[in-house]
Image (cartoon, rainbow, N blue to C red; front, side, top):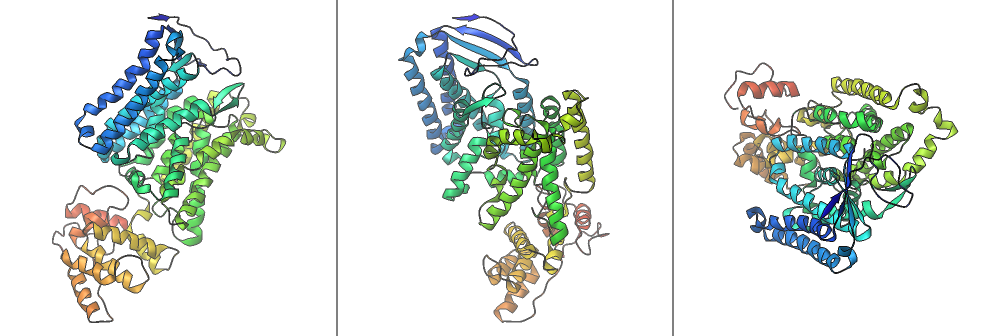
Length: 547
């Protein structure tokens, strides 16, 4: 039996206690639960997780089925342990706290998942696994909280944690038990790793970024990144049209309510300016196909911006964002030089940044830097007015970057003509990246790409299969120049031939970093080829014959 005692309070807790502190915008109530009701609540979520075993998608994949069975069994044992201890003889308090911070973040993240899934169907196919993680998170968090104290806060808290984790890293179905473990690590860190902040105990680490960083390190150390969909996630998040604009727009409510615009803007601008400087020095792009990769842009809006684990000073938040942007660039370079997957560049540094927030705040409040704090410079403005001012500046900056093609769908680094010219000009790493893109397009069935890749292999030291084998693949798909070149190479001829792509090649080689090209009419293909800078394509929209 539950006895409701609805309250509305804004008082701070006694230091050392851990319970809900509602803000003025939050909905709050509390209930005293009888021992029987208290035991039934986490058990209900545990049984809900076990119910996923009835789904055909789970039963038909034995490794996935055992992952669900193992997670449900562990929770059932935990429930049983609490039943035979003093837990079920206590009167527990259930606090229902609907924090704006949680449901605003969850709505933004859910919007990204829906929009991304519309253009990459695997997201929707993974939806039931995200739902299972949510159920597991509620059960685990409740059991952990009530194992340690007489109070549990129920709300939307698990939603932004689970959505954030699943925007950046999924384990494949055969290793899905590690996904449950990753969720458990996040909630355990939130509950157990705490420090005093602003007069009360608060979790140190962002509960989604901490497990992402821990498991990313483990995957890098073991060379097991193929156990995840991490690379595909980072790549396919650019498939939806206008994804940068979408992320910018869905980030605005959180920036208005929680004052995190300065973190996002400083992170994006820092990364962008480094990219501009790199391009000015080398003639190529640091991230190859963008100034700020879409997955990094997403992290700058919805991963490291948790206000609970960020500096509290406004200058501190600007420094925090700059450090995130700078560390992303450094990690990308270090991982690339080590031959490791670079999609971890946005995940590894966040816990270290969380640990540094007190130091950052102290630096921001020092005599040297305090005079630069926007809160001091704009002290005549109320906090929400400063939030609006930051958002106005961010709107201007984002619009300028979009006009300059610094963000958006039309960055020239996506397209082969830029890298062909860069390779001819001997720009740093240009030929290696060109070879990588041509090899990928060859694998997708472009005979022209196979021919060009084979020629590049013959001229330069490029990793991969031999040039003759590559040309043979081009010949197999009917590209005449590849057949001619394969025969000439067998005869040790010195001169090989190159020619323009066929119309059938364009749907493959025009993709850039986006998803599949849907309009394959000759007019549309030649118009897109012209826009990307392919030679002899402008004005050929009426040509329908393949060449």
